[in-house]
Length: 465
Image (cartoon, rainbow, N blue to C red; front, side):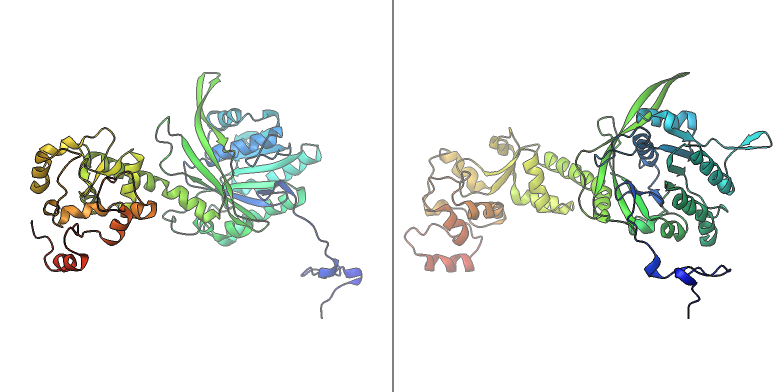
């Protein structure tokens, strides 16, 4: 039986503290940024080096320092922000980013170090209890610190893989957040070779970081961006984990260079701009898309270069182009998309509505075929007849051979749309849709009937006239 004191309160003694659920009040989560930063909670901001974490953090702190706009367009509550970094120079890196983000510097507090016996030294994780006491003192004096940012969030012992050490170090931070009603953001890097893991499992160090954090905010650079001035760094922001709200959706941003006047010259830094349109989908899909962007871009560039080179000397039979592309590992579907993106088309040689389909780039001339190997049967017929008036007698129809395969490259387009402008509408074979769908390689029936011509094609395919 539980030893619970009167009125639902436990007796005054040492040991476990147990309350009846009936006596515990219901409270809603209070947000500084709805579903992203909660009051009284610990958060993680994680990402690879170069993903824009610190520039993004400076932008968020700037928004809270002046009551500006957050990535989703909502207005931030104006509060004091305390920032500590153990990696970047305050004067050369942190200050330029805060200024570029238009922060109200009067509301930004920077932890520079510790004073000990009249001397100044670096802040250490073991100094956390003293920092907690100082924050409580400042708040008691009316300095409304609402956000604390720690870059990075280490363990008390320095061993970030020791669960007990990490939990012991994080405990006073969690209690500070709860007791003083502020949001703590700790920055962590990603583990090496973790790209195939789920987002929450990519965090470097002990799983205690993940377990103790209520919301894990994940930053990912869109791979392939940031390579040139006209290709600035792009990134996405998602929630890899949340115990307090939804995780779907996110925000995209662009990081651009900025130059500021400094006391001793020009300070080069970076500035961040949020996209006006929010991202949709689950965080895993959003990040995977960002990670695959470079691969898709590289593949597209390679495919476009291939098609340009292939068609540089003039039209090429469609099936020949597809076979050549497949030999390079490109799919027919992607090759057709690239052809369209280049403004090219699939068409037949003028005057030869029964001939093979060719892939042609804008400005190409079928006369370019004159210097390249082609079917003698077609060449002879071309020499003997005008482009638009040639002998359509049965004896001049070509045999079925590999060249003829190209005619079916766009067969689905013909079947869907009926007669197509790319076909010779003077063709005496009748409706082109019916021909392509049902009589693809039958010769004109002429004096014979279909039942007689079918065995010929079945038994003597590819015989010359």
